[in-house]
Image: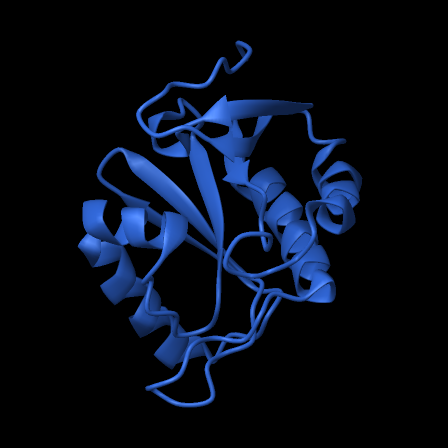
Length: 162
């Protein structure tokens, strides 16, 4: 069940957080930067995974750390070289990533999920284009899905109970 909330996703009680990235992302802005600052080992593990698996947009990788699980949704094209920024998000990448995330949630028996408006910040997509994809892929899950529509630093969202 989808719940649209406002607040700081890093204060979520969900058992899995998700965010959008590019293959070999530098985690240099937005939620990715906040995650990198809290769990630097996650970025090292992500880069290792990228080198081992040559991921493509649409893929999903789940990292488990101390008291946290984070799903990395590859929604952007990889940067052309080490000195450039990743490409913009594409709705087809978001579509595939959300489909793969829903499968992973069922396989791993995730109890709840929190995610921002994937692909709409740094990725540059319009929320009105992406929102129906959330409903299509995540709306039928039998777990609470907290979609953080707006960010409010340091404020816990009113997440309905599980």
